[in-house]
Amino acid sequence: MHLLYVGGGWPASIGMENKIALKQATNYYEAIVDNDLSEVDGILKDPIRVRKLLASLARNTATTATLVTIQNDVDVADERPATNTILTYLRGLERLFVIEDQPAWSPELRSRSRLRKAAKRHFVDPSIAVAAMKTNPDGLLKDMKTFGCLFESMCIRDLRIYTQMLSGDIFHYRDNTNLEADAIIALHDGRWAAVEIKLGQREVDKAAENLLKLRDKIDTEKMKKPSFLMVITGDGYAYQRKDGVYCIPISCLKA
Image (tube, rainbow, N blue to C red; front, side):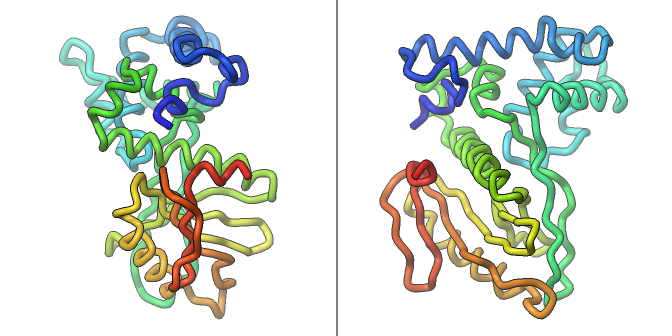
């Protein structure tokens, strides 16, 4: 599965040998640094800062990393770039369809929990993050925290593709009690579902508990009940738990 991270979903890499597939993402990354980001708006970008920015975004994949965190990471010669500079770089990456934020969901709640509004940061394909960190499959297996974040990002990528076909959007949920859901599938007709994403089976029970807590917080007099609650895992088999939560390995999403 880790080869999916580094090879990505690029059409040119499908069916290719692993080394060739890995090279596709690296070549795309280098093109972003050397030419594409400067050409998208006609403003010359510092390639050193572009590399640092992409590496920072890669390390913070699937998190709500603040702009200040990213600014500190892009420091060059003890000089932190201005906020407007970072925003210009980020807007360029969005226009190139290199990054795509996952906005926070704002449902109607029964309680007075305060919702977090920060978006999660993702590359459109996690293989770009791998290229930006200059790592490989073996390196990922030595850093399970990063491995898990990239797995979440890969699942979000796939969920976005399928949800867009159903006229919907993908959000995330987090409130001031630290209750969260990695993905909220929200269709334009009001239907919604909540998803947690976990690499292994040992985390399924806690993930299902979180989803049930979120379900119970929603004011169903103002919103529809969830169409389903689901935990996506990196392994195992598909089944429905006694509490109604579905447990689905990522390989089933293509079905």
